[in-house]
Image (cartoon, rainbow, N blue to C red; front, top):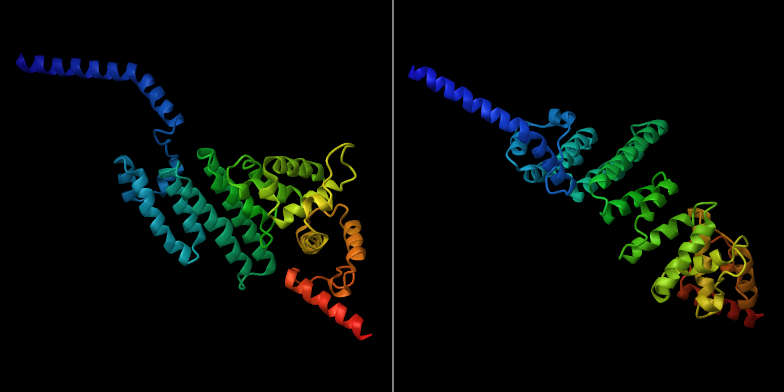
Length: 335
């Protein structure tokens, strides 16, 4: 009889606990989702990621040590980097970022390994044919981009992720995709870092058809802090070149040479160096040729410093400018 009562009591207790749990479960799930939305609690780990975890990682996950396990795994992933085991490294960072998704550092490191290191390795791999080099390079660039984008879902305020994604797609030594680069740099237009703020302008100034947008962006930066941005040679030239665009509406501000540069000589130095930007990086030329030829006539520039006669091979520095003019004057005196 006593045994029956004990069994009955246990059944009652079990039913009560199950019922309480059943009614509490929706509220607890809602509470947990609320914590995840606020990034107080970690998101659930995808079933595919579970299958890639080792026993230690699983134990750490259930033990509430996800960030600790992510740290240990990131150290171990370095071996795969040293041995060029890129697919294994990719798996490592899939697990690492799942363990600690709100740590932008892991997303950035994984994307850097794939989009920068692995892509460069593929491009330089002499055992691959040119077609295979390009195929693997593009594969790793896309993998790196995917990791940047996924990381930004969890860390949308990470300026480093936005910047490095844009830098990858605007790198002249990779496979530039300036539209994707501009997409990333656009998110940094209001950054407190002036280098980050300028990169959007410096990117869209290389995209045909976006010259007026580039002018608007240049004017925004000028109004923000003209003195600071005018320290950058390319910015100074863009202020002049973008303002020379004949497609701009009437009445807009068009900076003149004397408003941008202290002297005509300084203007010529910057414009001469911009020639390489036009030829190699695809920067907007605008009214470049007319401006340059006016300065060439006005300053009586020697043929050695005239890009229309002598193709520029390297940047023009003040010391070279001075030397070439002295040489011109000596030659004139000798005649």
